[in-house]
Image 1: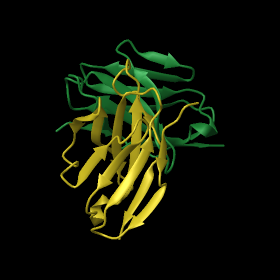
Image 2: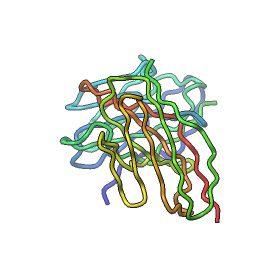
Image 3: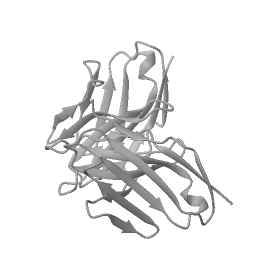
Length: 115
Length: 111
């Protein structure tokens, strides 16, 4: 069964450092997303990406965040200068073209710990 | 503010029991509705989409009441493997692909 893969599974970083989280979406999918979940809290939307550009972003996705699809397979989330409150599980997701919005396939997540 | 509210539980039920979860959403313009399942420290996985007419998938039945802005999930004949957190998820429609998640209802099925 095709799946979304994410690396690293866990990253520990110092406050102020840059972090890049990587995702390989399902190969024939067209829509890509990043969500995050702070421990014990709800899953929150960060950004959606379609046709090589951001289609939507939330208030959380400020200037410290950026996304990129550098090649035909990878989809990355960069946090330029991490803060303590960025500690969370970051989920990448993808969906196909002709699909009901909301039927997403999530990766297993990258746990980010900012010290 | 667009919110999705759920009873956090936990719901502790014996194997074979029937259990129902409820969810309310605040955005009356919402178009699409879903139940996701999340195991402890794992990713959310789509359980089922929720249609206006209601829909069933094996032991799982989902209902939508647009007038009351209310969604439900019924699980019949609970299995130990049903133990998880069930997330109510709403899409606002209007061309948006953004999802709003509820905090989830935790279910523990006990032998």
